[in-house]
Length: 523
Ligand code: MSP
Image (cartoon, rainbow, N blue to C red; front, side):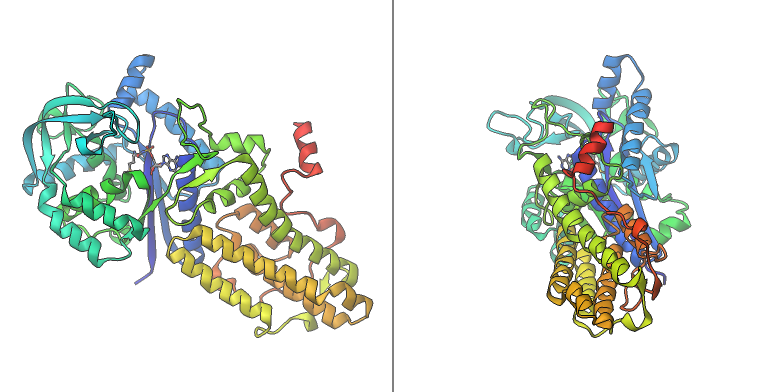
């Protein structure tokens, strides 16, 4: 059977513009999927937008437009932001898509037929920020929602309820017996505790209170409540249909990873799993809960006024390509921990890693190749696959694959930079300029080959983070543009004319370089 990898992101609420928290998740996901595509042919990334619910309804009302008009407007902001960041998703789903709505109705009906949904009158505390009823135990001392710092509304309604309690033990069992199911594993205990106290959940709202949503078939008094609607996107987008699931669905499901933020882990590892169990579908392999991005160490919020959009960073630093921002975000935090964005940090990190370390290594080596060999690598310069740097390159590749398998993206970036560091040290130690002065030309050529072949490896491994810089490195090495991992073997860099003086350019300009400053003045 052909290997596949199916990754999904959370689908974003479209009540505002995307900020760098949303971007963080999409970048992490894109880096993972680009890495998987380097290894296998069938790697698929799904993202999307979550468009129903009371918040959209109210905002649209206050602006005097229809909810769909509001969604269309805001959806394009998300679509444009992902384009600018070069998020290479295979599909973007909107929960207002006709096909999605049709299948959500089927799913709801099936859960009803299975006896897992029942009607019940309920009084609860509803937070429209979470689009969810809250447990009074989870509120702050002042009775506010801890995520949105807003007082939830007390609501009494007759709604449909899903029998979550029926699946409680099975879910706990699944979590305990599948160590890779929830990553990072530090979240497991917290979830098992929540599961202990879990109650059946409301899965619809009355039509009176929420009109903007998918109706329940055969009951025009109720609107399906956003979480069943939203979570189902992971299967409806790839062609799930109760009667007749598509070939694509059969190939891709179950998801290999749902990439989501730590705030919605309960919905994914408890609610979603129970729904899948009721539908009799296989369960996702991993739920990867990333941390949150803060700005200068504070939570991003409209009231503080510190919300940053990805395009703000791109514009402030006059970035022509998103590579540096992608690199910074993807390496902002260890697995599942919170990360922080600050302009200073961003500048320092990308200058150090992309300009001083990786970029400079390529630049000075190509310059030496021109100076000593007129830009040509001779056959006899090709070094052995048992040489120290060659072995390090192989180890780096294996460590990076391992880190990606554990969703340790920051760690994978560190491993790559450490390799580039040791190649830089190798240049200092072997001092090719001295070898040239002493007229040990073959030895000098061998050093340059070793560095440039290491550079070819670095370009391929850097690709998921920085696709444009990587392409530029391969071009300057006069190599074909192919980022598959099968190209990672020592000796792949061909002998022959590589470059000329005027073809050598920095692959990444320091953000505070004179040149970059001049560019700012021009704009
Ligand atoms: N619509 C729901 C998800 C449904 S998934 C079936 C939702 N939307 S959201 O727009 O509020 O958040 C979308 C994703 O962005 C979530 O995974 C959330 O954790 C993430 N983030 C929102 N703000 C964030 C930060 N400040 N930092 C990192 N991620 C953040 O929840």
